[in-house]
Image 1: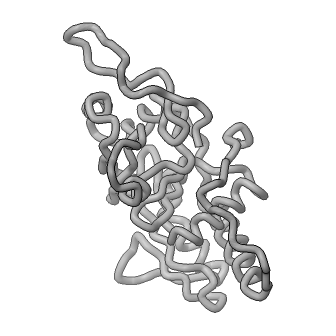
Image 2: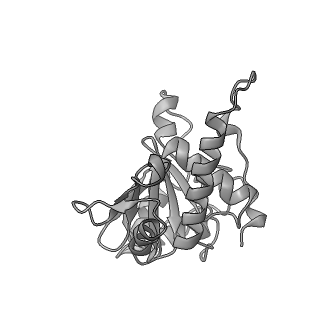
Length: 231
């Protein structure tokens, strides 16, 4: 997650000038540089930034394949992948939670190559009915279905600034940043790294299934990822 904090959108701007995002981001939100990177994925980035300046809590739909691809995993397995990336690997790019799934932002081209890598390593196979997704049937189903969004696809990304004023906390948690973008040129993992993270997560889950613990599971939302370790 981003390591800087930010007040609400109160930055004044000159009359007639386009509104701008504030100088810093909330701890769970994107910085202005990160928002600019997200907006660059669309056809009209200035319009996206103007929308966010006026409505900083509004999620938007952005195309994949140019600035980023997205690999979407079930929430629990996605969290395990994220833990492996930060605890044993190079870190991650931006990561968001959306409607029960984890969205890992990846290098462009990942959506095309990752399904082939899974199939080659016998950890899964393509779903012929959905070329942009994979169904992982290999290795006893240890890896759940991962949806790969690339060129021709679009995803809903959370707002740059989280809305903490709403009356329904559950709704706010449906769309939020776990690792928020904080630069115009974020490091993004490629297909090989995400394959590694998925395999390690699957193996860790299999090992945990045979262990019995008297301790309750830790609060998964209490994770803090040190972005200074990211490559």
